[in-house]
Image (cartoon, rainbow, N blue to C red; front, top):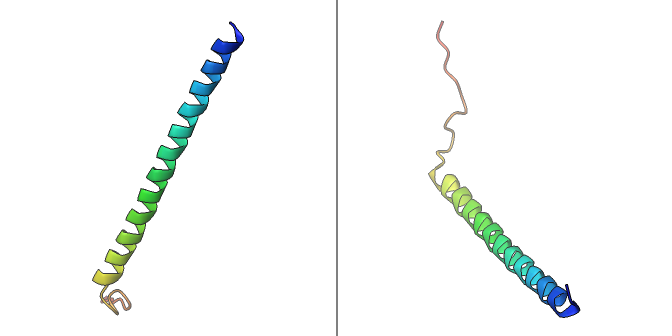
Length: 58
């Protein structure tokens, strides 16, 4: 393989890795935002005092 071919091959691999890293970063950002939204939703539907006491009859 000549130097030009090797250079092109390495450049293509580097570009591919850069694209994969950018996609992974966006997926991580989306997952964090989804987690924050779910946390907010759970806080809004929580009923104060619910599950605080357990009535046991024997």
